[in-house]
Length: 404
Image 1 (cartoon, one colour):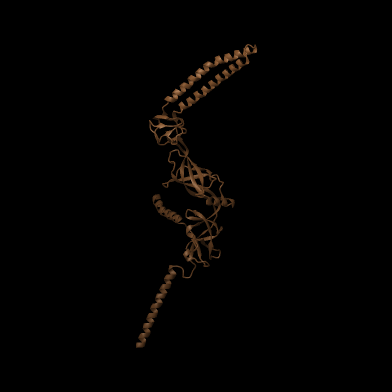
Image 2 (cartoon, helix red, strand yellow):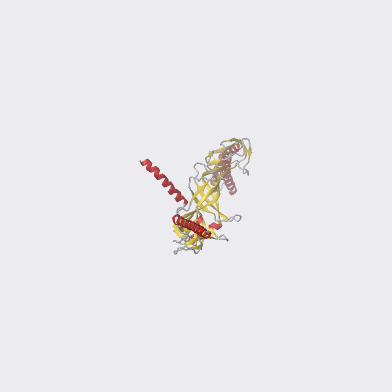
């Protein structure tokens, strides 16, 4: 009896274990593929395409023209005839220096000129009469020479006083200090009653032309040589019509609405920074740009004719920091491939070597893939495309309701 009970107990336990195993197998069959199948990875197929590349370079704005206003004659400033910070026109009177002494010098020079011109006709007639008498030998040669010399001296005196009058007139004109260029004038360094002198080291004010505006940005010689090498190898076309167009990002992160033009690249390398200066010209009709502002210029480098782009999430690095990717070959096996990256473009890497057209690069599921293993590939769908699909699906029922 005890033996029967033991045998019955073991049978019941065996049946219970068999039911549990069968249920587990049924759940595995209904829930997904059996264990041991190839893992699934998302891949992109490399397709070279033309890509326009840009670079952001930090720089500062600079006025298109700068003129320091200085007096050309000395004297007391009687009036200041402009508003600080206002726009002025070329030739506009800015300061009036006391003209009294210069007016007197001008009047004195004119009077001296008039006296010399009054004496000249008599001296000329005397020289002509002496010349006629010399022909009849009525006067000596010495008398003729003296008369000719007196005539030439009188004519020279007239020319001297004419030059003196012109010099006095210029000095009198310089008592009105005018704007040499059109632009915006800054603060005045002198007030009415101040004594100024010609060629003084400090300026009275500074005028800057703000439309258009220069933007000077430094570019390292390393980038310059890299671009030149890419152009020589035929990977980069830097002679397009848009290569001289430059964008601008302001200090607060906003994009400047007007596009600039690359004017020139300096030929001298700064020994302290190892860079050259790029100068761009931007229109500034509303005066948004001011001299000395910190900006970032978006410079067009060129067009890569056969650019290869790989999402950054599909690129890993070895212990030495070298970039690598996992590629699925034609047999469905994973291979590790070393690559060379040029630069980041958005959320992608621009690959210069290591990949070719048609290669399948694993982007998602890299943790399940090992070199030499067999995998199942599906197309990779970017996150923004997924979001766009979800938004479209969500909008479809609303459209149906409104259509009804």
